[in-house]
Length: 413
Image 1 (cartoon, helix red, strand yellow):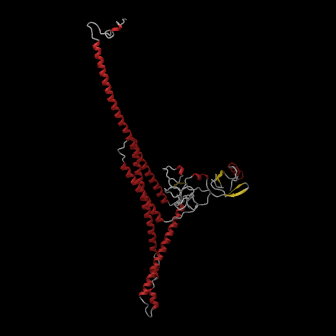
Image 2: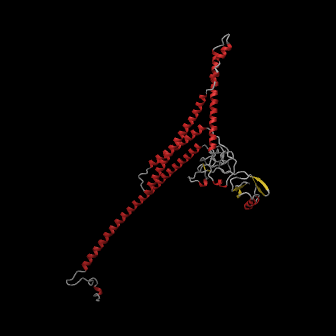
Image 3: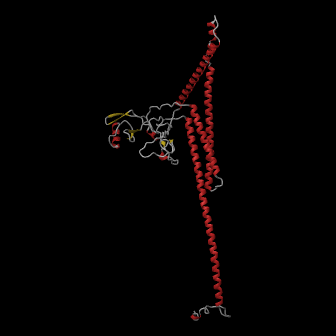
């Protein structure tokens, strides 16, 4: 379906006019393509619509998985990423110089969604479209299929091993003991293993399947224990971070030291390494997981605003989210350490400024004492001069007439 240069309002009005029985909410171009995205208000999408007296088939729209080229994770875009900005290559997520203008990139692409050797969002990516999480019924069917596949594999392995043992045994007997004269048929039939011996032992099959189930259960328990330990460690780290924030806010810098932060960072790195190893072991033990195809159902208008999810095995998703939480916690710890360093630098500057202020105050105090001494000396000299000039007369109060003889007597009131 093409726009052919028509305004969007005219296209929308054409859809509303020719499809009166349908609840059409919006119709707009789909990016730079020649298709139109129509949003319906019902729960199901019709198979076709009428536009310009022509019928057009409708294909349900599925969102692409949102990817971030900054932190190389899914679920958000780079323009809303809250993590520190990086200068990694969008193609291979490595730090290398950009090629000169006009030259193509030669690095190997690495998909953010599936980590395949293709561009992110390419049509070769099997997980580029958002998929609905499997329901409980689909998960039970998948587990039953996986259990049947494991049982068939164990039977084939047991059959091949028993066939090899029987063939090698018969060859050894035929080469070591030649046939006796006169009783070839009976002896030969006697050398053949009995049908009871060749019959499959059901207990072996049960034991093999039970062993596989027990191994899976043990792995799951070990994985759950590891996840619980990581959760406890994360809680301890969060409590420690809260304590550090309180200490920094209250000004008690003695309780937060650099060795404690370094130890917490080492513990966080060790926990992240353990999570990566356990995730790798779980993926190797489980092998490829068959993912069910999504049902061909309509797309609701509200589904366009839902969060993006990738259809991956549930334990791997849990471990990936746990690894992301541990990484975020390590970043928070690093930020707290940087904040502490900045606070210590500011405190050092304030202390240096206080020292300079104290020195200035000491200088001003010494200058004040010198000025005070000078003023007192001048005052003593003036006092001595006044006492010499104003000698008291018996029976009369001292006046200034003796100091100013050329002015005559002082005026009387």
